[in-house]
Image (cartoon, rainbow, N blue to C red; front, side):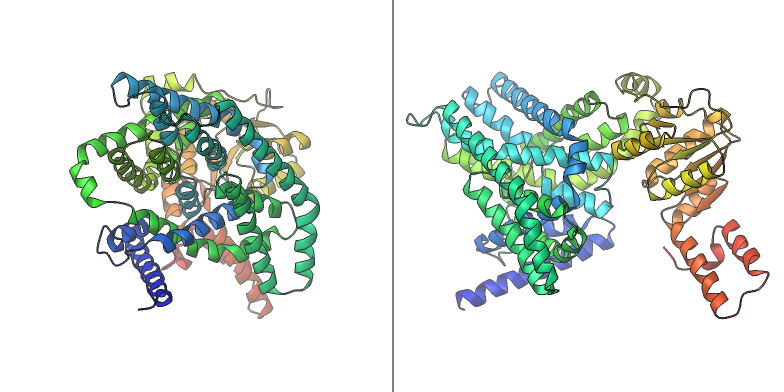
Length: 578
């Protein structure tokens, strides 16, 4: 079989296995990411050996990572990044420093390493988390634009930037290399490279890239537009790779360049299919690195490392997020979301292996531990809301942790009574608030987004900043003096928790809630909402009303019929609708 044909067969095998694995776990109600990882384990050189040479697959997998970060950059604009800049910059440095310091101290105390540089290296390895896996998990859950989603991604981006610095420093601390450059020289050189790259990126993003994209768009050629995006993404990623930085940073910055121009949405739509296809290759390639033999032979040690890493990183991230003024819930979700070892720790580990900072046996243990933490990430993040609920049910623990929570000051609502509390100032909440103000009703908004709060300040609308389901925030909302509560939150779990807590505080309060799925219609009603609205059904009713009017079937009873459908929670029209 020729080399070209062999590669084609390998690629077909990987994509086919990814499709089968993803479908299987999806039917089991699990994230497709787990199917990709499992497929790699099964077909790889350490499994059924259907793929023996994974070099070509890994090269394509790197393209998948580049597209993942490029798409993130397009969605994650500079304006959004600026909102969480404090926790991104200072918080990530704290997280990396604390993780490296604690790991080095524990490793030295228990004799796990022979010298301090090895301990610091292990700390650097374990401090990195997985941008690709977390991004994929958030995407599947539709939570990229949540507050905790943006914090996680901002911290992860800074970790990726720090990876370039780590890769440059590791050879300089090789204990067997006497001719290595001084550390100050290495640090200075890296800073010069990073500064030069960022300056070049800002210049290109402001004056060059917009002009090129605009000219390509004028051709109205879909193929040219896509080719230009691919060239931009991979070209900038290649530049950062040549500078000794990670390809993730280059691809992310390329995405940021596109995010600030008019064609961002069109670019994202073009790249998403490529991103998903190549990203599946990346996750399958990670699964191929898992050695079942090593896992079995060192099961106890690996299980201990997995527990120590995931619990330890969560406990480090949790107080850091609280320290920067975010809510208890946001801190729990963030801690449980980035408590794995990053896939790019593999890259750093290889450099450490060559620099005698890690042994071959320790390297194999690290591969097994990292793979398991990546597999467990969707489960850890999925359990975070339940863990937060559990904390809320422990009076002493919740009271203690709530003291660490910094409540943002409420604005303009002193002495407010007979008002309507609106939880969430997104697209739905914004319209509701405007209608209430036009009719003269006093309004109090509960919102945790900095951007939304800035808009509320400009409009001089009373608000309380923080998670609407937090007891600390609800205590400031004067629910006992309110006429009604409207829940327009994007998160179903927060909606349910807010509904239960509001009902406990004000049993007779009129509560209207937005449902996200058909199942929630009955659930929210049972929890105490007087009215539950499902946007898709409301859109269907509005379209049906206009259609019937167009067809001449409208009569005096039509409005009454539509109201009856709403009062019955759409039961008569939602058969087989999920």
